[in-house]
Every structure is written in C-alpha cells, then in structure tokens.
Image (cartoon, rainbow, N blue to C red; front, side):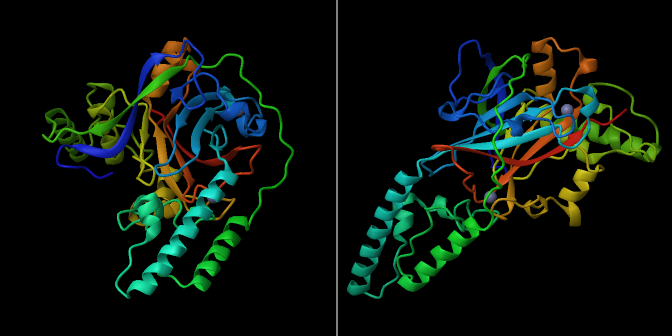
Length: 386
Ligand SMILES: [Zn+2]
Ligand SMILES: [Zn+2]
C-alpha cells in the first residue's frame, strides 16, 4: 500500500450499499446471496463444498475483478462453511476465480497486432537504426506488459501463456518465436486434472445480499489523536504488564498465550479499520494484505524473513507461477451479513480476516464454452480467542 500526499492509498475499499432485491448481473460486485454465473455456466460443484465436512458453502463475496487492459471478464467468488464443527479449520473457506474469454477472438486480435508489430519493425529497420519504441506498448498500453512500477517486476501477462505476449519490435524473429514457445510450454506444463464436474449445490439459506460501493481508501494525514492515544496506552500497558482498561472494542488488545502482549500488528489493523469503519473488502491486486495478527501460523508463513512478500504465497498449481495478494475480507462483513440475515452471533463466523491470492499470470482455467473457474489461494486469520 502506497500513500499519496492527499492520504489516498492504492487500496480500493468495498462498502455495503443497497440490498440486492432484484436479480443482479454476473458482473455485479456483491456480498452474500447466491453466485450469479458467467453466461449462466456454473462452476464445478466441488469448488463450492467445504473441504472439512463436504457440505455446501454460503457465498460471502462475488467481486468483479476485471483487469485493466484486458478484453475478458474476470470475477472472484469467496465461500464459507457455516457448520460450527468446521470453524477454524483449513478448507472451510474457499475462493475461486471465474473468467469469460473468447480465445478465438483474442488470438485474432493478437495475430493482427503481431503482424502490425512485425511490419512496423521491418519498416523501422529499413528506415534507421535509431531507438525503437515497442509497438505493443502503443497498441495495448504499457501496463499490460509489466513496468518498472510493478512491485513484482512483471504484470500478469508479462511472462504468461497469454496471447497478449509482448510483440517486441526490435527483437529478432527467431528469439520472438522461441520466447513464444517457451511461454506456451509454461502455460501447458500442467493441464488440469480431468476430474468429472459435479453439479453446483445451492445453499437453501444464503446470507442476505448487498451491492458493494467501491471507493479509494483515504487515510487522514493528521496523526489521529485517538489512535495516538491508543498506541500510547498500549505502550504503557506493555511497560506495566497491566490488563487493557476496556474502552471501545478495538482497544481490547488480544492476549497471546504467554501472558499479556501488545500485538502491534493487530493495533495497526484496528487503526486502518477505524479510519474507514464500513470497509468489508480491501482490494489491491499485487499489494500487501493487512495482517490481523502476527502470531498465528499463517502470519509466520506470510511474513517469514521479516516482512510480507508475495513469494510466500503458494504458487499457482496450474501454471506454477507465483500468486499475488488480491483482496481481503474485513470483520465488519461478519457483523453486517449476520445482523442483516438474522444470524445469532454465537452461531456466527469467527475470522479476523480472509485473504485471497491469485495467479500472477491469471492463467486460463479449462473453459466450458467461453467460461472457466479455477480455485485460488485463501488464507484465514481466525478471530483471537479471548
Ligand atoms: Zn464444513
Ligand atoms: Zn496460474
């Protein structure tokens, strides 16, 4: 997360808006409700089952996550099991990515772009030996191909099997062909197992559904007096070894197993939430998640070696590319969905944050027609047990 002078960060926040009373489109960003499928093509039912109990899960989020400078649609879906026995167990929260692509049309577009790039390269080679701009950049815009600004050195399509691979004007044809072949090889290295698809199981009692309003995160420039006071209080408590003195819910600093320890990670999380308390989703593909705790096993994996790095996420099992952080669900989502859906808090969800990491190359899942769904990485930090 980078912050500009105005306090605006590169994070997009999802905030609950109107209740969904009509039938939403497949491209609407919503919380709760039932999934709406791309072109009416449902995901494999296996993706919607809890890995612990095998039961059908309820949808938490369907988000339109189309990437800039691409010609295809892209959605992310997040589900949770509501079986009490599955709480705090891996596999009881799952996420998958849906894409709607017209590969034939994309190939046509790419072929045309390549032809144009080659023609331009030839023309330029004949004209002069002066530095040549990349034609691909002019056609598609630089951002599709990775730029120095990217924290990972390569944009989703920079090295992938994508038909959008960069046509390099000055590159010799042989190299170009080889790089295409290499890229293709990577893309095809691990075809998905051809497990028979199951019909999707719809939960009978989904959460109430609400559209999300998406806005840029803005943080106050002034040091927040309340936050500063809390931090001071936390420091004092750490020094005294005394218990927290109540106050608002976020100031109840969680204890670790080794007695009272002020969790600065949690404090930072709470401070960010306090700045925009209605946030239920934080979105920043390629950004860094905000950890709810630094003491659990997930935090230790994600922050191994001193800090979060995308390299700590498990790689995409399909194309072996790195995954990048894309979005996280924030705890106000629990309060909002459960309150609006009449769920008793004792029977409610118990997570602090749910993070979703997606394939950096945005590899194409097996398509059924023009639509495909592929499971992505989910990391859950559970609510601290007080
Ligand atoms: Zn379950
Ligand atoms: Zn992949």
